[in-house]
Image (cartoon, rainbow, N blue to C red):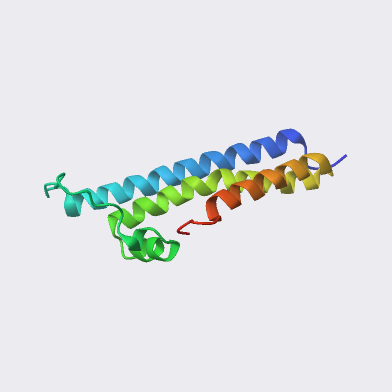
Length: 127
């Protein structure tokens, strides 16, 4: 019998999801506080649409802005962590199924991971 039981793997996956969501929420909250402290008193101009700046649409730009403690960059970093959480869950599931020698579920989880990564990193993506 394997030392990795279904219950143990489910507990680890549950903890992974909780940690990812809670960390993401804390990072987004911190970014929101920083953003409001710096820009909370300014009045938005709704007559002209201004999308995301180009430096917040790439991984390098997001990390650069987050490490410079810019609120929007920190918020974007938190959202990236939120997106990465289910991807990490699927990746860990593959490892768990491999530890249990369950090839069929390992194959299905690998297909799901490939689809997730393709949709995140596929053609036309800014990342």
